[in-house]
Image (cartoon, rainbow, N blue to C red):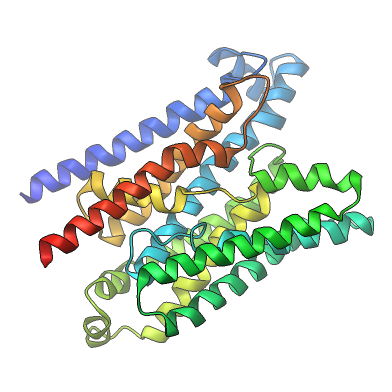
Length: 341
């Protein structure tokens, strides 16, 4: 039995890594200007013409790396929230955390654009983190009064609607020159991300993901109940605070650079847990990270190529694939409850 589980996980990780490589290469070769794999390698090595080098090194490569890193970040953020609330449909988008980050980033962008101030990456992430923490604070306050998880999810959706409405109101009164930038960002997209942005994203995402992985052992104990975790020596206050901070940092980083991206944080952890046949954090955190990278690379490729040269928002594609998975997770949870009762 143990050998079968080990083989299943080995095959699972191998499949995810292969899919990551395949979609990453497709991201580099596909576009309005199609390139072969050899042309891509020539462009990256600097032995190709200037146009090909500019397309690959300055546009497609940073976009593909950002899609992989931010997809992984969003997926791990969703898994942390699902562990915190003990519910498989908890995620940064559903609970309104992404919308809170979207609101504060939009306000920061409007202020900077109207005053001719260049907003750097750290300021964008900081603004998104403040918004995500405000939304998370509202959810935590409500969680103390609302015992039913379904009602808490509905409250999170309402918080998301309120934040989105305020964002749209603010965008409506922005200068015409600023509306295009804000509108494109608020729809969600990995386009326009530079290699300098990628360096900042990599530092934040790898640090937060590594810290999340370090929490695997107390998270496993927490999955068996708060009393069991306390008996195992887990400091629940510090542990919950770490989960909230890490989840908020990861989702804030995504919103700051790519805008709101829907359903990845719920759909990917659910798919990974089903495929690997376990919910152990030491397995699911790295698998979710790679799975989120595959999911976002695939969705970004479809968003770019489905109606080329017109590009769809990334949330349009992630919703098409992610929403049915969320519904399946809800039905599966209801079936498990009936089985228990």
